[in-house]
Length: 255
Image (tube, rainbow, N blue to C red; front, top):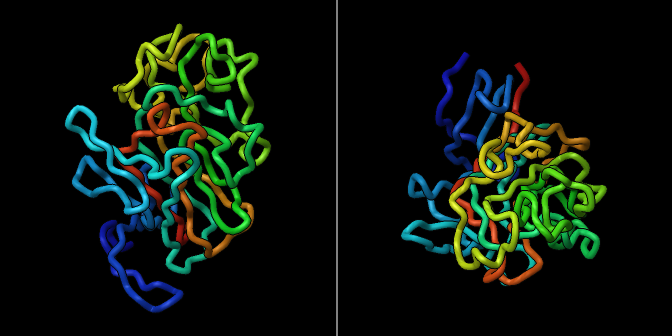
């Protein structure tokens, strides 16, 4: 078969061409088939934040965060007119202060900040693909602010029905008592990587070894673009998801 690498790909909508990274013989995290990358930024390699996000610097390191104070900021990744049947991707991000998982989920639909973190959807009306969720701490006093998968998870806010089991939830906060002690920092523990402060006895947050990668077959294949939304229901001084890297692939052929 053809080698993995960069290819000139024609947009099925308008005939334009763009250079895309393709894995022809399968992707190490996404599985068999041909996978094409349609979404990407990586501050570790100098590929900066999309224009709809805000660049934030903490301890001389840059992060991407939502541009609105409360609510969601969207980034759209172009399907290039391909009918998307299966998607795969990853996020590298860190917690700022007091993100509270699904604590506000009962107040919002899929169109609002139903969780603190990053929502991945497609189409209008939005169809949920995956959620990357940030809890306030692993096991502390604000029960509804913790991840549903955390130890002693009874009483935590549940994900909305449209999310189901299609999410990861993690915290970077090492404190189990009073999170305000840590106001104003980006916690150094990377989120959704099956390691760190969430990986304790009684927690299932680290059980999926594929993290930070997700993979999902879509119920209804569509040519609609994929939308990533950085969301929270409180001000950025209180909570945001500090993001360094995003990768998004679509499967174009079975093998």
